[in-house]
Length: 343
Ligand code: KPL
Image (cartoon, rainbow, N blue to C red; front, side, top):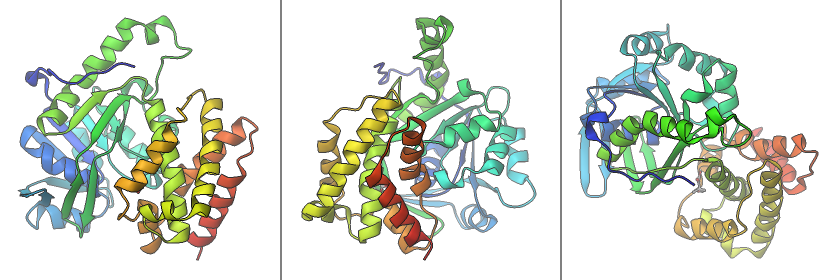
């Protein structure tokens, strides 16, 4: 595992960055990065939110005892292609894609592809798996995509306000790892040095803005660990309508979580991503640490929004199918969630 924790040459910081997605994480990043970039564009889904932020006095960030009001230049994805045009003019060095998985449809992937200049790179902040394939299908160069797995906590309140609920660690690495099966060109030291050098400007920017970044290559074990955590906690809390900590109070819920865990471990193994059995303890720790929180999936269900189910449980089931494996507990959870979403 490669690690990279700092001593970044500050001259190498990214100057032009764009963030697509103005949910909790997108707003947190925009408010924190804005003072360190010559140009920053925050792309929202709706024109209403773009106007609320740029016309209404900026992003309100509550971070511990700090209350920050950050101006942000905005553009909306809805409407006649204004956001893509602005991005094309700006030629950002980095675009951070901070929308939820379920919003990465063909149209969005194509807009991102058109918005990328010759040297633009893309950082993907999504949970789950499957979005990289969508972006590849839109013609985005795999070598220009980087994935992040973050434990930063943020909570959105109305269209402008965001609370930084917990500091965490953000791991960044190539989204499409060439470590296995690639040619020497794509797996040797020269390749590794190139990808780190290309990401250094972004790591410099995020570090200056106060985030803890760790270069991680390959990143797949972390993407899969997060996927497994989400596949154990999120649908069960959404089906049972309970907070994360309450999962630990029911031996029956714990029994089902353990079955989901064992199935997920076998699927990850078949995919060539061996996960540590110690991950079970980590999942329980996350339930303890976030005991009072409602999972993102429970929040989506309660608000009547589409959930990330198809990118979490659905993605595991698709992987299982690829290897002719059965995952009966995940299938049952999937069907129950679909029945709830269809309500
Ligand atoms: O990531 C989560 C989520 O809610 O999406 C955890 C912390 C795993 C569960 O709350």
